Image 1 (tube, rainbow, N blue to C red):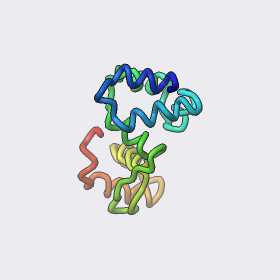
Image 2: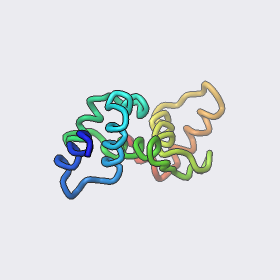
Image 3: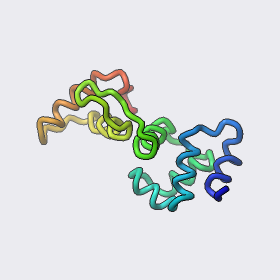
Image 4: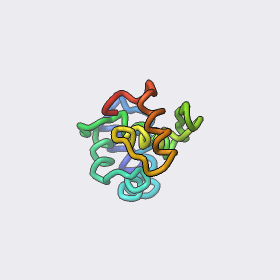
Length: 121
């Protein structure tokens, strides 16, 4: 067993979520820095999640891991099935209106009406 997987198993114990295990496995296959870059997150965030010490929004990290490494999708009313990490990015963008292009306007409206978009998610 690799160091990241051991770290996650020791930190999370019997409550180790499958997505954290997958995160640990990806880190073992490359590095925390490379995994963090693929997730568009920091290496320290990845490290804190593996050690069960992350105090931020774990659901957001889970969505990202599932979208990037586990083929997780969400059914978007505007775009159809999209990776869960892309859904999360659109939800973030929908906090502020931007009219740079028509897709951004459409997604602003769609995301703000979407049940997945709990304000601040």
